[in-house]
Length: 239
Image 1: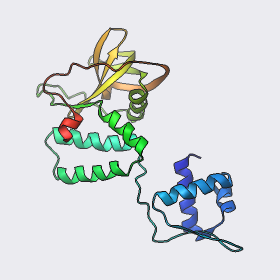
Image 2: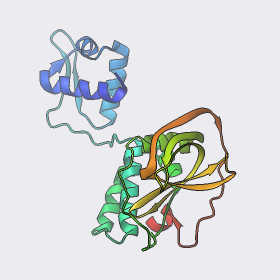
Image 3: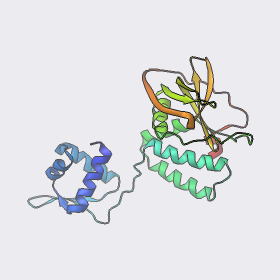
Image 4: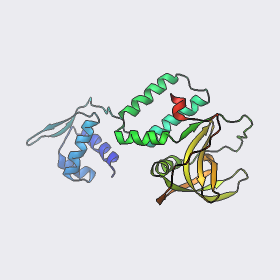
């Protein structure tokens, strides 16, 4: 059981039973006493009010009015929110944008420092532009939900990304590339990558990418992507 699931199980158990001992919680989630004690400290840091009653008949009690005050979102979850807002803003279809920006800023401030650093590095790879009105969207399909988690690892750790790609004619190929940027031209999203086999940059429509796999091991260097003048970094748009 990972940390998040264990924390959820502890909170559910305390809400259900009212009072529980460290040993009982350890049995419930299959962890050691030491791990449970660390988990209780972490939950308190997140805003849960957990009381300790010593002695026979005592134990841990969760204040029934207690709620979590610290965001527990992963970097990819916050990134998905940010790029969704950025895409809507670029398309000119984001009402109440000031409120959206304010809410996202609060979420970002609630993240731990290491996640904030990862998020900002991830956002540095994001660029926004306008789609040509002549673009054919008749074959636009859904994106693989595995893309964003794979992109996070590939971009942040600078690992190669392997995937199947279907071109405009429906031909499928296997590609291994160096992910350099994400480009949003609403409603289309592209992976901009350096293709070592072709010794050049390539744009891959994300709805045509399937079964992405991060290649562990060798890393690559960050390259300057020659975007057109009408494409801007996310932070220029957000600022």
